[in-house]
Image (tube, protein in one colour):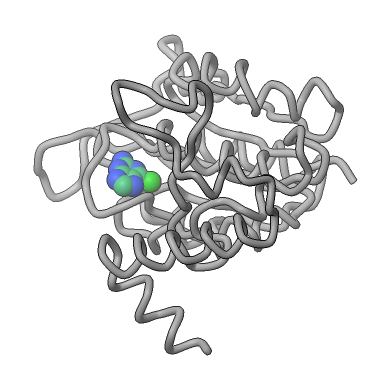
Length: 232
Ligand code: 6GU
């Protein structure tokens, strides 16, 4: 099953390079995913293809107008059914790995990027099924957040990562931070690689990694550690 992600943006140039390189590009090249970027200005109003306007009630910052967004959303919805229509917004629910895992099973997703202040509330009321933020800070627009979300989903599609296992051993997949990593040389600036990693004893190595993951999680992210204890 090929996953399709449609991204609507008033600044589509922001989306191009990150999605045309590295793992997202590999997902597309392998035919496992399709990412389609839609320029909101193609649906803009009048001679100047206007997409934003001042807000009613006054206040700083432009708002994306409902007509161009509705025209774009309806064009896409006429072509296929969407599992979710996601609006990227700092007032959405905070993205975490478990949301990524769930969304990675979807076939068709539509992502709407706000720019400037945001989008007209009626678009949220009429079309949006899910609102996502990538953290408690404000970005200039939803584009970077859409890249974050898209990257996090594409890498979970089976076959996208070289080693099928690697997504399963990521930080967060088991509620733990990842253990430390080492590669050659075996000694660097006087610091040796922990001996156990050179031992070839895979069982011992796994135990060591688990122990380090637990230590790291307890000291750096006690919040995650307490959640994982609560779940057990
Ligand atoms: Cl999804 N959008 C914007 N504009 N700022 C954000 C965000 C999204 N998530 C965190 N900050």
